[in-house]
Length: 458
Ligand SMILES: [Ca+2]
Image (cartoon, rainbow, N blue to C red; front, side, top):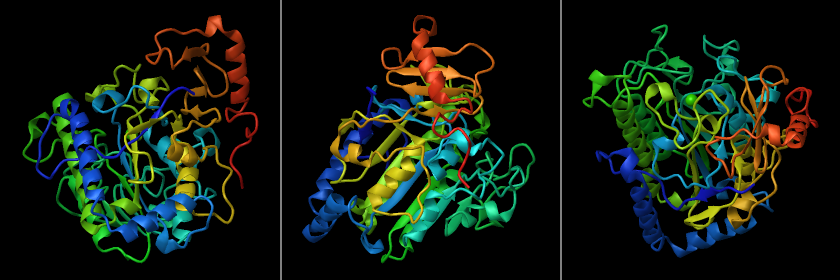
């Protein structure tokens, strides 16, 4: 599919304490940080450069020893929309699901929603193998800081301790288990129950959630076993509602509109930047694959914007599922180039396995595709059709996107050429009935596609 995913050389991060307006300055900041990384790379010891050059060349072919594998950091923001940031490239195409748990389930399993059946407040069934467990089995230290939302919490149907992140492959978890939390009190907004935990035990701590999560992540990196690689899943609750600005910045506007949202997002950028700065301090920046994305489109009721995309969170229009994303691994991924590759969140599990050289004993039947070779080379690879959403389904086949209900009931399907018409202004279903039929058949009667319509593996 015509499109793109930017392999960036830097990230939108700021020195601690720096304030800026997210909409205006972030593009320039990315460019500056990218240049800075390039300059510092020149001072990297030549022996280490050689080691990691070898890693890049052979990682897809060899089963690497744990100590030589790269670290992986996955930073996920919550409800950050396409128009909320200033560094999107018009060609960037990274797709997620329209709501929180659904995207997180696809991230953890490499499978589409219609197979796992995960919705908000359900939880992730134990039958599924998870990304952190695969990396842990390969010798990784596995840490999670932030929002889980896949079970083990009272609000989930699957609420037992066996569904906690520490039972699903993470050595360590710090943060919230549910879908939303007050940034300062760490209480659930609806029930006023504490939702802040460290390894399954309540953590009564003071502080702004964004900062606390970054503090924990930095501490884990500092105290790591340097003889083994690590996987850090840093899932901020920012900028999900109820949105709060950092202490001292506009508490009187709590949860009210875009000014507060931008303050929270600036704090988010600074917190993520502190974690990445720690990689530099530890001298491990060039041995770390960093991936960033938002879990769904911006929530228009909270002050987000997805412009120029249509609608937002909760829908399978582009504003709900096409999100800001970036990937970075200095000297391995091409710097500052735009890959003409179409990606979705389910791709990340198999892609990370390839990038790290990890082989699973019994790999899941992924819906996602390993796109690591395409990202490294900058070439586009053929990609299977995607199935996004839960209430509605979006079926992609370049350049088309069909929107329909999971089992074909309800309103008439809609068809868009999302390459020529990214804002989805013109429904062309009536003009292309043969494409509507083709994509409907690809979706299959169960919604999971013809080849795998019968649900998850045992
Ligand atoms: Ca979300």
